[in-house]
Length: 506
Image 1 (cartoon, one colour):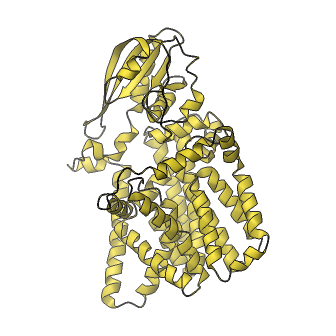
Image 2 (spheres, rainbow, N blue to C red; image 1 turned 180 degrees about the vertical axis):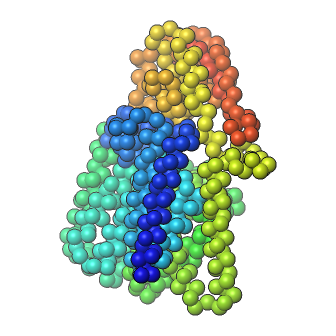
Image 3 (tube, rainbow, N blue to C red; image 1 turned 45 degrees about the vertical axis):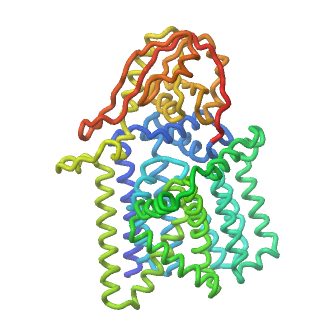
């Protein structure tokens, strides 16, 4: 009966999160962040792959916007849906590995409440399918270990292949699966059978769209990915590695982050030294990617969310080991763990409430600096689109909209009336997906509405037109406290003369 209670509580929790998130994205009317708008623009240009990443996120957005009216809601709907499916998989995996429905429930409650989990449930990014397929891969691998049945290999290959369509980091995740097989005395036998190689063929076949696209486009996505990781800006452990550690503790909460580190250290020992496949799997699917990105952080080339998929089995390991130790610890240590757990839940709920409804914190007299309020990225774009639309209507027929930034390009493509194709002027910027869509020969001689954020028009852009005049200086203010957030300069540009420049690939 106790077991059933936690099963019911788990699925009630998952459904509760799903309903709340759908309600939230349907009622808050927050604008798309730049990456969401960018991925939406991918979805209306169907392709086998894209410059920045594989096509899965675009396919998900395209699916929901194909039968729902185009809006922020339809673009984002995939986020809560996939988050719910991921939670089901993680629960099944955690409960089965730990042999405890209670611990499975704890994992399902904690993971979505962390700042990392909160954002992933309402904002659509390529991490949405990445986390789903990584969880699915871990479940299939665990079933292979537990049941010893070869039929799970094709499912592992398919999940890894679909994961590669979601995020190129799945090449690393595939290596983690291979590392587990190599290190496991019990599973190494599979290398003498055709099954792992069949799984690899299935993975490559499932991921073939990105290979076909890259072959046709001079492997530009692969060059972009390796460029992002190899470009070192500086070596400063104090301000990069420690910042990375602080970032992980921040987006997963300090208690959970250090529980993960402790759990993985124990799982690593048990898996490698004691030859325990359960712990070896938890370690191999988590520690390598976290360590790899931590090392990248020394060169200043990482973001806090990069290793997020490594925390799937990491969180399971952390909760599992801490609970196991908890039962045998002294009363003082047990009291400390209970207090830490309660405080973590309280902190997660508090941060979640503030993050979802920031007006609450302003209502009690606490002001957050405008640039530190993350929700300020979520509005103002519709106002900009409305104003650009008005300026565009005053321009000659055939005028186009242009920027010098792919994120701003995407926002205008979504919010300008009629969802026009927006051109990213090829001057002093990095390469982007827009360089595959924009045909500047087609707009040569035409007029444009040019938009730039937080500064006036660049001289290099001005030189590409016969004449330029400022149409409007738009200022965006916070909804919560009316603080200034950002501004935009909207220009009328006449007679595009063309011109190009060699752009950075990353």
